[in-house]
Length: 301
Image 1 (cartoon, rainbow, N blue to C red):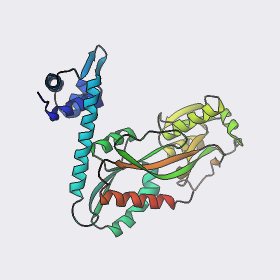
Image 2 (cartoon, rainbow, N blue to C red):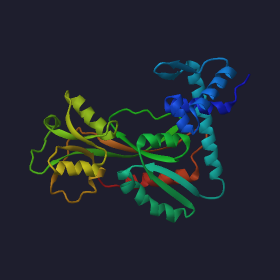
Image 3 (cartoon, helix red, strand yellow):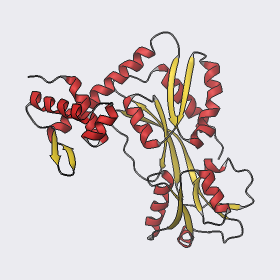
Image 4 (cartoon, one colour):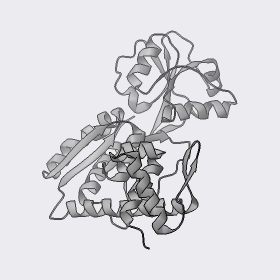
């Protein structure tokens, strides 16, 4: 018996949520209903799709094949909806753009007026949120575009079905409290204590990369994902901080900290991602991407 393709959404939810109970919360149904749909899928296909263990459930090899198929189907449906939304003349419609504070302030906001003048029928909705959550929203079509960041020196894999367009490579800077010794070479960083970035962020990975290249574990204290907070902690004498050059554009008054430029610090890469399957991006998405690239290339760091 051929399985009902609609059951694949339940298997996909279990995979993404990490379990049947969490999948029920994600889909807004009971865990029992999820289990019933998975059981019917296994009955129809004639093989197990989940391995049930005391520590939870895991995809079987067959389950992985079906999840991959479900993700392809989802991508095609999202692309079809976007294509339908773009039907008609000219650049128009709503583009939902996920981003974070510095990218909104220095790249996205300056792009809004030129886009509005060039494309009056284009509407842009900006969402400032958690990067990991926004990655999922892009995959499911709840976002059309997502601006992200990473340490440019650390390799990163672009997910299947997603296209990435580079925006800007901005050099890392070290800031230290005014009146403290200024590091003159990379090896001097081993004597400093840094304000830590949230684990997995570009800042966190850059600090860890520098420590690895220097053969030490750089000392850290405090944890923040907000550059203004990091600056305030440096001004309070709590340590040094590694910040991208773009973040420092918002601090013209630098009486309480010193900015240090060192060869070898590397750069933070900003990029914009959109869905990519057999179709080209919609005219609205392409117009926004092109303008973000133009603005980013004209930033003077």
